[in-house]
Length: 346
Image 1 (cartoon, rainbow, N blue to C red):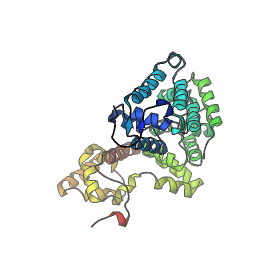
Image 2: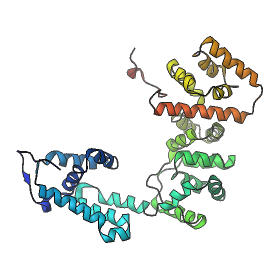
Image 3: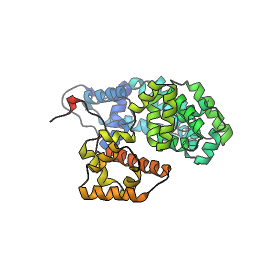
Image 4: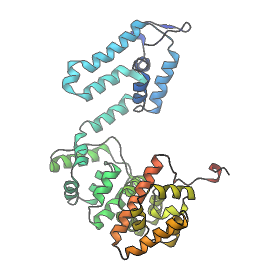
């Protein structure tokens, strides 16, 4: 429970509380761990309002705390909420919070996500089902759908589309700007109608070159290079923008030696052998120069012993290397970000 302090005004009337103060009392009485988790879902201005309210509330009567907690409990357990669902509760909660949140913006987001089972189920469908559905649609429609899916799922589906459709879709996604809620709602209706009622407008919109970079980072190397080549032929600047935001296998030559050594130690040797087969000497030497003479010699011997190999096997191995690099970066073991001179200390 919130502790009273000796100085500052006493808060003893629940009816005089603002929405921000109610939220502050609620958050300070659910434990720091839970409160911290809740804060992740708030906007910066909301966090600021509630934090300021917490800082300014010193002497709170226990009866006020009990009143606020009871109010939240009533909202969460009332019959109408149980029967009518989360959207009604969320709207009621917005009323209770008052001016501590931008109610209209939140309600717009609620509207966009109120039928979100459609896109969610779509994302969970089998790749073959999704591919079969998308191949019948216009590339612009496919691009709109991709803007609502997770990057990894989009990359998987992209790899199963024919090359011409792949390139067209990614080009349209690259040049896509803000999409109206009405358009997304139309697309979701098509999905519901043709795929058995799956997913509605997601609460986040991904489009533009940044989204394409994220998707291609998850896609196979062969898909990545084909799509980038297509876009480069249509719009060289757009292709360059995408490349600037994504990681390419050839970028390994720019890594510092320590980073390459960590990658070598963490990689499956079979992936290194296959992935370095037929690459430019600059890339291959980046690895060999960061290995002992004995280990480097053995790696070269293994590559020579392979003889001719299918290009797709090489690309798959390179994809595994890239995924390992991303995992190592997420774990904080390496960094692939290029640093400016100001960030480097000798």
